[in-house]
Image (cartoon, rainbow, N blue to C red; front, side, top):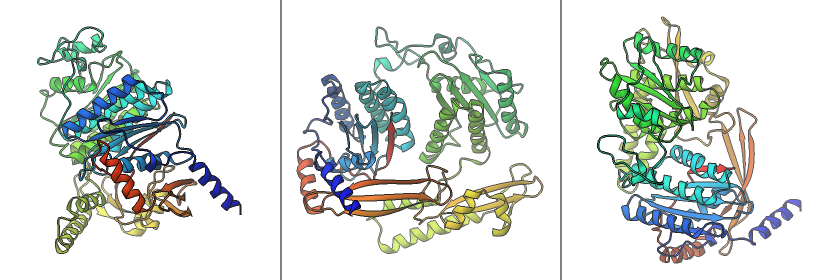
Length: 523
């Protein structure tokens, strides 16, 4: 009886506000909808201009929705429901993005279309630095304008259609740039700009030190720790890694410009491969540089962005540890390359790209080839980075002493399998991770192990007139993490399809869809 009353209460509450599929999209010619009355007309007009230009460029579609509350519905589920109801994105491309803010709930979501080439690692940055940062200052208009602008830039660049530069985008840095003036000109750090202009050389003193600290922001002890970390690759004749540390007073010059200046200056010193780990302590901002021969495709660039994000997050906690972790990634990339994309992700992408294009026989050939390739890649002999001798692959019993508790749990659950390669000469171990292609377990937010399971209980079933309600219970087999939440399900197809078709007929969106990937934020 108690559970029945609870369900009735939830359903009664849900009937008092608009469900995601009941929120009509903006009328044709508009892309942003404010259901709170808190967004200024100027901001809404600006959002519509950004989205209209983006749609015309062919780089994707951007939708914006501001509500007061989801009234207890999981914000990610609510925003995904709106995304699919509106059909954000071009039909067949699914290249849309929805920026969603529930002001009263202090929650925000960025939902990615299933075909979007923008990664969640990139939208995590937009959520943190543009949306949440402004909402913490109670500046809703800035959160929307800056968030939409950043998403527009990411979508264009992801498909090679960079936006046309605005005079406020630079300050005359470089021989082909233009100089801006007036109130639109961005703030410039004059001291750092001298390095970019070429008026001043970077204080590089390798191999005595590998740290280029432009503002003397680090202590002598911190510099010494970084020098030790970067000395191994040079002493082994395998490359050079520089740390570039700044503490800027303005947004310009950018980290990319400063890093490129350092690369240009030190590039002529030797022919060894060059890497740079750069950190601006004010922000913080981070940038990693690796040669084009190392960063070869989208996966490599995504991994580079992931490490840059981790460095930014570590900067305020333990900057030296974060810098050294980034240096180890760069060193491994220079010596053996960036770790390849997990085969499970390759398989998933292959299926997505070839669904409906290959006959069944061709699909089996593709699957067989990928599986054979995965097996060959896994069993090929690994060489020790230190002595260059072949490593020994340990058996199941011998490998356990080199695995952590979480890794053993993953193996027991068969969500991940580990190979342990041993080098007796160097007394060194290499642990390689292989995720299961088909598994019901996912990454736990508590311990990061692939040991989280979930179960779904239907509290009420969907009808043609209202959505259903489900309870999801999550638990981790490795740590104490547990989580329970409710989510709504769409109305039955006959009603929802007619609603969607009528909505799309009167809106600018093209009929895209999303599985709910993206970024979440709160303040």
